[in-house]
Length: 138
Image (cartoon, rainbow, N blue to C red; front, side):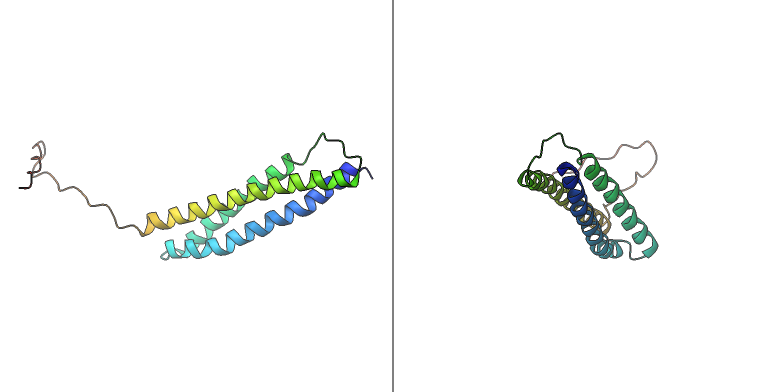
């Protein structure tokens, strides 16, 4: 078997389980965030969690497959491992960045949902009447 094919197989054998591990971690712990946010609608929390996980899988596995190819010559086993370390390292960094983005999304959803509602402006006494400017404080 050609060494580059061995590098491709090893790359996929490392990258795909790594992607699955990160996605499962996001799903498991993201569910807790979303359950708190959507306490009145647990079905919605589950649905949002699944949609985020599916999106994560699509983007991650798409990147892994696009990053698979290489035009490098790998005549020795050492060069196979060097190529593999660069590819797996880049995938790990991308997965880490995506994980961080997902955590920030979960936190943003949680904050928006738990924030007190913004005060509504007082209605005008009758339509067309201009609102008086606020009086300066002494």
